[in-house]
Amino acid sequence: MREASSRGGSFPHVKLWTLHSGGALDGPDDVVAPSERLSWGRTVGLGMQHVVAMFGATFVFPLLMGLSPQLAIMMSGLATLLFLVLTAGRVPSYLGSSASFVGVTGIIAAHGGSASDKTGALFFIGVALLIVGIAIHALGASFMHRVMPPAVTGAVIMLIGFNLAPVVASVYWPQDQWIAILVMLFVITVSVASRGFLSRISIFAAVIVGYALSWLADVGLGPITAPNAAGEVTTHLRVDWSAVAAAPWIGLPQATTATTPGWHLPTFQLGFILTVLPIVVALVAENIGHVKAVGEMTGEDLDPYVGRAVGADGLATMIATSVGGAPTTTYAENIGVMAATRVYSTAAYVVAALTAILFGFSPKFGAVVSAIPGGVLGGITVVLYGMIGLLGAKIWVEHDVHFGHPATLVPLAAGIIMGVGNVSVHITEGFELSGIALGTITVIVGYHLAHALARRARPEPGVPDFSGTDLGSSAEPDVVEGWGRHRD
Image 1 (cartoon, helix red, strand yellow):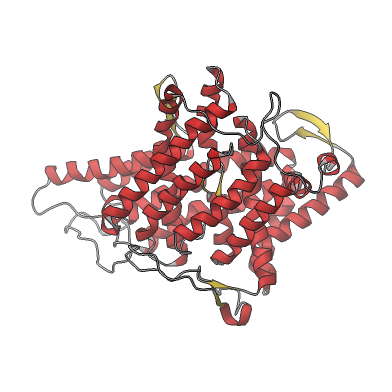
Image 2 (spheres, one colour):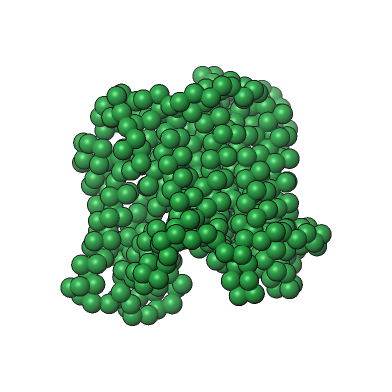
């Protein structure tokens, strides 16, 4: 989409994507770079996979926040387009709503805050992210290398992926375990055994096949008694298109009323703003981890774009909340899609963004996607989320990270368990750190603290650097004889 300076310091001229290998794939292991694209027909299929991956969370979280899901879907598309432009087309990523915002909006509601109070407070999260992004950009890539060496980066990416495991186990899988197993087996089989383009759109194909299997199960076996999307055990059909039938083909998001959320202008109250600002820590951690994961998959040094990514997320959040939409963040779910397809083309994200905007103008299309049976999503996400987590292990292996000294082993172990287990630390009545944010902070702070203490304890001849070869560097880690070169 754009050809960018390796320093990320200037905006280059826009150029179209390069057509990859005549628009087709050369084989099952062929990789499509962010600046390339396949034929537009194939790109549309890949873009629809990204829509499937992001839609559930981007639709549900605004509902939990008391905001309009239709408006959130539309603004997520606009936010993604803005993100791609501001990161010069080098960072393939989708921006949607996040669970990080649900808790703080609940606090605002508990204190009598309206929908406009929520979006007014969340607007300043965007302001804070923009400021942090500018600061990271000014400090440069070397700063990112020092803060997040391969040992830390791998741990952060691992906890991001595995943190999503409870979503599969408690939300999607219980809705229909047998359909989930069949869909999972379909994804595995098609991804590995198929030699054509089908292997690259295995997720999208799994949705269609899963939909058909769920409908056949309804016809042959009747309704299922299992948890629904809200977690309530009921007897219901797996495929419910009642909302699809009721939804209009074309319709703009409505204005906010006393009973229905919609578009509105934000209102600003200092107390609510101060309540939400601490979650900026979580959002910065998520953004950095996601960019690192994408960089590892694409084989490109994206550190110069971390500041842009964080700042773009902040600006997108400001724009979305200024009209009453939900704030945004980068999505790990879509990283999983790229890991499965090995297609990193930002053209696919443009398709996904435009599709989301279309959904914003057509509630019926949105209803079709939101009606995907939970068992189908369970079979898909169990593969995608696991692949994100294993990217962290891939970084450790490829960058020669060693675990022969507790200065590396202990803080990473603690942070991963905090992230995967959704451990929480309650700091004040209205603010807590948990999950990805707490795990990331533990990994980064704990790692640097442990290494500082180890260097002080063994000043001669020095402390071995078990962080791994620097991302983007071929330098070998400095290891003191007798401390062990093996991986524990």
